[in-house]
Image (tube, rainbow, N blue to C red; front, side, top):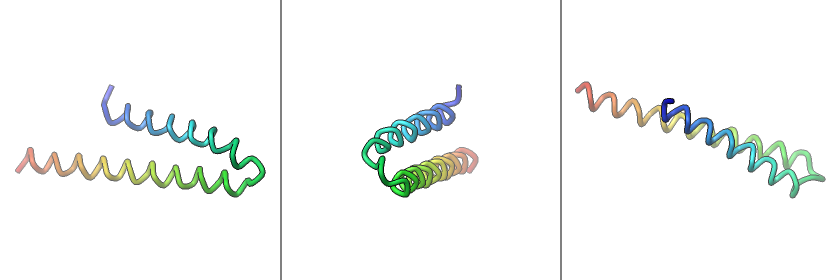
Length: 64
């Protein structure tokens, strides 16, 4: 398997675990749960973009 795919799977698992943990703390506040999940999704997207930009830099180094 590609290491990039493995990283995405690990990040997905982390988001699910953290969402389940915070679900216990913010059980009475639904907006709290939604904001935590939303923040996790944003962090996940940022991580993907960072990895993609790093990969592009390496490709430029190899081809130039």
